[in-house]
Structures are given as C-alpha cells and as structure tokens.
Length: 184
Image (cartoon, rainbow, N blue to C red; front, side, top):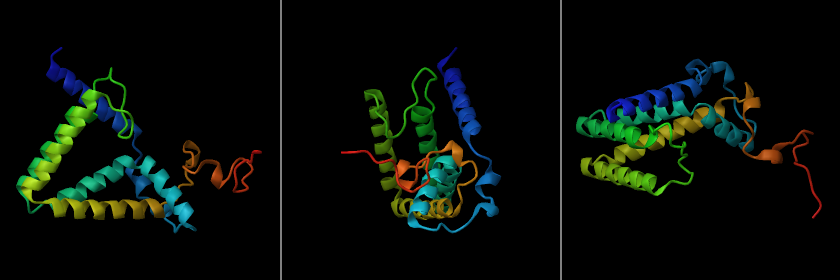
C-alpha cells in the first residue's frame, strides 16, 4: 500500500472516529435544554461538561467565526484552509499504530517538532497576511459564543456519562454538598 493511500485511510478512520463520537446537532441546539444557571459553580460545571459533550460543534463554530472574519481577505482564507489541512494531515490524522495524543499530554520529540513547526508556520501566516486582529477578534467572539451557549445549556440529560470536574466537592453519594471527610 502506498503512503498516499495509507494517509487517506488514516484520514478516513479519523473522520469516522470523530463522527462516531459527536452528538447530534439537534441535541446541541435544543431550545428546551436552555435555562439560566443558578450559580457560578453550576455555570462552570455546565461549561466544562458541554465543552466535552459538544466539542465538535463548538470547534465548527470557532472555524466558522474565523472564516467569516476572513471573507474580505481571500488570500488569507486560502492560507488558513491550507494550514487547517496541514494540521490535520501532520498532527490530528495519525497512523492507527500511534497512540492518541491529547494536546495537554506528553508529546514525543517528533510530535514536538511537528507542533512547533506548524505553530511557527501559523504565526508567520497570520503576521504575513496582516489579519492577526481579525483572527484574534473572531476567536474572542467565537469563544464568547461557545461559553455563553455552554453555560446556558442544561446538562441534566445524560449526565451519568460524565463526572463533575469538581469531584466530591459538589456532592458525593450522600448528596450533602461536601465530600467525605478523613481524619488528619
């Protein structure tokens, strides 16, 4: 098998993996699941759970905001499409034999070189095209929209699949709001 067909196979597997783990779009935008959080703690818990649950949809929203900000800069839009493809080919579409790497996990030396190279190329592209302000503002607007939606969307539907990021601080099995105490 040639390397190009292997790469296409890896991209297909990565795409199928992403599609298999994403939630339905209707679930993400369900108006019946929108309500105000009762506290800041509940809002941050909602944001954390919804970011995990709807990461695919939120990433698409951020990319859409970036694309909208670059509509009047077609060359920059084309370069960012090439950058997106480069990140996908070189970092996110890994060989099936390679272990999955989280962005915050430990990267091998080869992975570090690839990430640093892509990051430098991305920064050079942003600086050379002069759209850094558009990129920055679109990222801020997109992130604000994502956090706003994630904070307003209730997480009581299927929360059994997820654990609270605060662990026992928000309530253990007894539901008393405090975790188990141990003697010092």
